[in-house]
Length: 261
Ligand code: NAD
Image 1 (cartoon, helix red, strand yellow):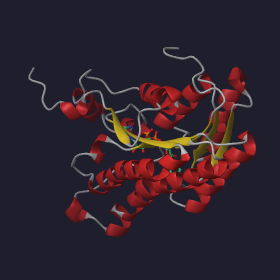
Image 2 (cartoon, rainbow, N blue to C red):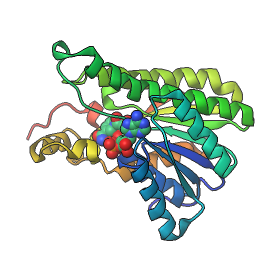
Image 3 (cartoon, protein in one colour):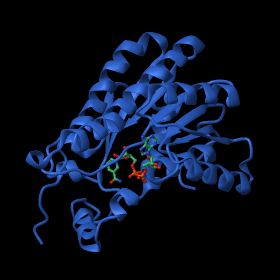
Image 4 (cartoon, protein in one colour):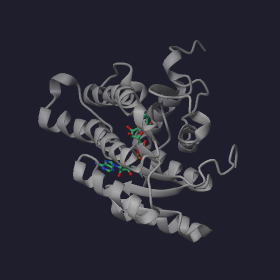
């Protein structure tokens, strides 16, 4: 595979939302790069299936699964503990679990259209940073925190009031975590995917997916594996100088406004 060389050998990673889409592609990539990975998802059955498939592929001992709802701090703390129990330590957390969707602001029922989104996409990342940050400090080894924001974290978008707010918070958390945790040797980076071909996007009509693809410079959806490639680089020691910032993995979406043909 392109660009692979066991860059994560000896590292232990926890990946939330690891049972599908970007998270799943990142679990697979990390294992190929030599990491041990705890696959964390609210969907325990799919997380176990991911582990079984990787084990069947000759990688037994490289993966384990844990169920957690990232909106619940105790769940995330328990997942971090499980990574330590199974693999002995934690070096990388990828706070990636998320939900999408939304309504026009004035149609909102706050209990339905605001609170649940904030609980998963915003609080979930906060919980990951806090639980992993505590583990990194007590290990005394440093660590890497990578969190999934979105192009919507940096701009307003239709039907995305709550999602944009949560994704903007992820960028803010990343800056503050880099600052607060630097003394423990911890790095924090946020990524902003654009339109990625995962179940979140694939639930939409063919027509809408074609529109989404046309918003990116290659006129195609980004592959989940292409996001995973960037996350693996960011998790590796090759990215030691990248800290407290946003890495755009949006196929040019954020710099491109209109196709003239
Ligand atoms: P996906 O639906 O394929 O995967 C999301 C995973 O998160 C699922 O396995 C789901 O079970 C899990 N999950 C949902 N709620 C959870 C919770 N409370 N606790 C634990 N796990 C939970 O979607 P994806 O496209 O791979 O999305 C991954 C991340 O990327 C999300 O944060 C999403 O907002 C972000 N993102 C996606 C795109 C895109 O175009 N697909 C673009 C920008 C950002």
